[in-house]
Image (cartoon, rainbow, N blue to C red; front, top):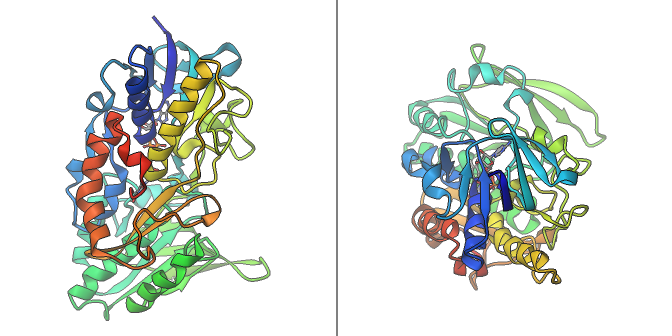
Length: 406
Ligand code: FAD
């Protein structure tokens, strides 16, 4: 049978969590998740893996263990959305019909968008915490490097976890500082963005760490090409007038964060906005043209920080609204744009940035959230992974009612 009351496309953080939330509210609902991958990942811990602070094996679990009980797992990839026919085409299982649809396909890491990168990733000192198999290589490189140039890059927005490129930088510098090597290792940060962080209150506290680690900070500088064996990176640098020039920089270690876009399957569908993202109302998370379709997680057009923390809040809103739409009622819930970014500024301390739409700071705890704190480190390293597997993916939502997650 290829027809379901609710079909969820994507079984990542948002997809599995909304399946659990819907099942909690409506146990009889016939739900399927279309998801090709055998493995489910807790990506927020990859930053810690790259710093030798977390076991990579604890960031993944078999997908079969993450699909909630009573939900059908269709192990296939969606190849086309046909909202007029209320169906999704798949590569292995043909057409899947739905009454209501949730799109939760995440985003595309565009490794090929940087010339020469795919040939050299994982060797020649080129790494990225954005790939599960390479995060351990980051740690290996950080430990091995005794002297030389260490470059860390960030592409243009939007990206998932906008703080992650900096987190790799700070944790590596903290390690080198602790080992007395920072004088011989010169760290540089190249970001395509015009400022260090999108929410202004956090910029100065982060700049203090840039100074502490003596980082050469380069704004408006976009990585465009890498020559691994030649150990050289090229950047397109924009000046105040908007003119671009190309500069090259030698490296011994290069940590790359790839440019990120909407997935092709979404981009080419009637669900997409001009930028390729699933076009939903930013408060209700309902599609603007197809009322029976909702979007959650990194794939949507909503202007929040693309994080698991945002997904955790969104799935509750979308589950409530989807069931109301099903019952022909007005949609009861509104998403405020909450997202969070635990900035690992040193080993053992985090600035827990939490903000909503328009960069409005929405701290969970009643103290100054721009200060680095030991408690936030413990939260990220120990508590949040546990909460993710045992609460968020199980539809236990008390955590989503408060903030504090990443
Ligand atoms: P994903 O979890 O990426 O899941 C998407 C799913 O869709 C995948 O399972 C994929 O296989 C599936 N899929 C793809 N294409 C198809 C298709 N055609 N058909 C069917 N299924 C498909 N967030 C935080 O909150 N705090 C952090 O500190 C943090 N740090 C991060 C650090 C790193 C290095 C990275 C990479 C991410 C980090 N994040 C962090 C971001 C967080 O992991 C994502 O925002 C979150 O996983 C988004 O959930 P999602 O379900 O939208 O996407």
